[in-house]
Amino acid sequence: MRQIDCTHVLTGNSVANHHTIEIDGERISALRPGAGTSKPRLLAMPALVNAHDHGRAVRTSSIGAGGKPLETWLQYMAMFPAVDPYLAAAVSLGNSALGGAGIVMMHYTRAQGFTDLPTEVAEVARAARDVGVRVGFAVSMKDRNPIGYGPPEPLLEALPKAARDEITSRFVRPPLAPTDYLKLVDDVAAAAEGPTFNVQYGPNGVQWCSNALLEAIAEASALSGRRIHMHLLETRYQRGYLDQLYGGDVVKFLDSIGLLSPRLTLAHCVWTRPDELELLAARGVTISTNSSSNLRLRSGIAPAARMLGCGCRVAMGIDGGALDDDDDMLRELRLTHLLHLGSGFTPKVSESDMLAVAAQTGRLSVTNSPEGGIIEAGAPADLLLLDYDALDDDHLRDDLDPVDIVFARANARHISELIVAGRTVVREGRVLGIDLEAARREVLLRMREGQPAMAQLAAALPQLDRAVAAQMERQFSCT
Image 1 (spheres, helix red, strand yellow):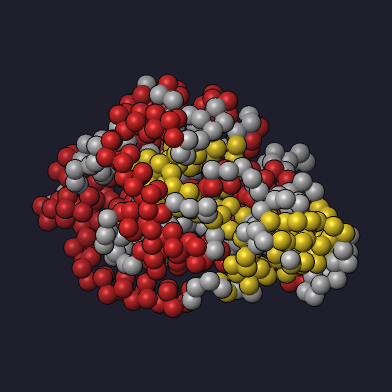
Image 2 (tube, helix red, strand yellow):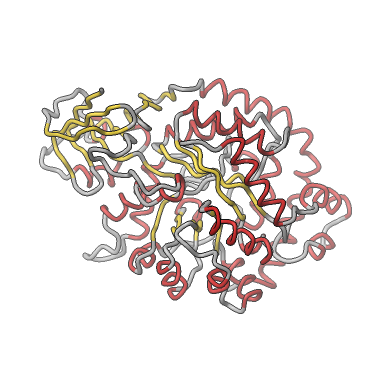
């Protein structure tokens, strides 16, 4: 039994001042009035949920992808040399934990490839257990448009021969058949799934998946109950391409094949129309907004206030590209709130709305269980403890609303402790389950050693950038 004396507790429904949280095993056994005199003063809130990410160990700006739109940024991911999957996952998930996320979605769109995927994912799951976070793992599934949107030949023909050969060898290869993809997900689940590691179908996006693959995934999910995690309408160019392909009704198409359901999470939805949001709300789909990533990749601002207003389930993700190129979930919470707060005296999105977005709604997306995201007796003991003395270091008034202080200035440096399933994962800036600094040093060493082999790709990518940009603006741009 552990008792945590807190000055403030953001329960998820209200603020409880001067309360004690009691933890018994993996669950909260009680929340009762207490002295609230701990030193430093503590503010407790539910552990935050990173509802959309990809498990990258190194920032993408470090390989030249900074400041690029999504459609050219994507190809730069190949500049990351393969490294040990356990170390890569440990670094990524350790960084997430330091940023306040105890529950993390990992859409695994780039495997390391040293072994078969089930063996690799078993190592990812081992890293997740060692770090101590809950993980949703979506197996990448893609069978069309290996470069850009549409057949790759026009893009390849626009490149000089050396660049064309390099890009072809890196990106163009035969895809798996839908039945083979489904079997792969089953094999990954058999190798890696566990109480805190939920394996899901991960179609990369409608623009990258054939109708046959999407239909097969929808049917398999309905039969098995396995969740689906997919990107949708992230950029104006995706909107333009999919409007051409589906007559402006891509969301209705997804509904017609049974893909829209409470088992589905869609990342981004920046370019969704009001009628499409109404349909997503009616079907119980979860949407993960990724504010910093959308800004950094020039994708736009997702209509989160409208999503909430029409009843959509809205969660929050980092997507490997938080505002300061880190994993700070508290800063992401503030940014997302400010982006959608609106102007004038009537807020479009309240602080309580945003706390639910950041800590509660996404749990279903990641864990396949809606349980948790609130501090009350019987709930999972997933807690984020902030040093309230450091947070309120001016300490001019004792009657300030602690929620206002969190939304005004909280960031990762204020984290005192992250607890997941009753286990301390982070304390005072350290991940306790792994040697994060040693893992990061090893990952960076391997990546630096692999950079000379990337020289031809590095030379070819700027040429591909120009060809992709020309195609997007000429064929698929919308307003």
